[in-house]
Every structure is written in C-alpha cells, then in structure tokens.
Image (cartoon, rainbow, N blue to C red; front, top):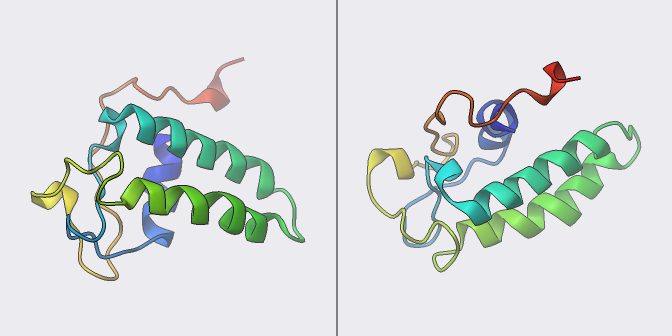
Length: 112
C-alpha cells in the first residue's frame, strides 16, 4: 500500500495542501482512518486497473472522488496536520509524503 501512495496516488492527485482548505498528513500512516481509506483505494485500484474499458473511470468516480475529499477535508482525519513542510504542498506538487517505518506495510506480493 505504501508503494501505491508513494509512487502513484500522491503524484496523480496533486492538490495545493494549505492546512486550511485542504489537509493532508505526510505521515498519513499514523492516522487509522486514513490507512483504512487509502487501503480501500489501493485495493479497488488493483482490481479496477485490470479492466481496460471502464476500470480507471470507475475507480476515479466511485473511489478516489469519494474518499480523497473526505481525507482532505479540514474537519477530516488529517485535521491536525495543518503546519510544517511535511504536511503542506503548493499547487502542482505531489501530495506530502514521509516514509513509514520499515516493515509497517509488508509487500504482499512476496508473501505466499
């Protein structure tokens, strides 16, 4: 899941994060609700990206466009992340990101 957030989501869903109109925590992995929502986004993405016809459209419409505004709402799960470089970004920049502790998100592809 970390790879999905680090290498995909934060680069394609670029928003100005100012801590007032939109909030995002660089340490997203410290917020339980965020982890659950981001895992739901990742799992839906993994499934829907296999559908070459409508998969990505469905993912954006039904999943990303639903969960991300909730995550970024000033009263949402990242409401406490309103200051500091690790929680802010300018328009066009990737969403803030701080690497989680080693082993927090094991690579499920290597587990049998």
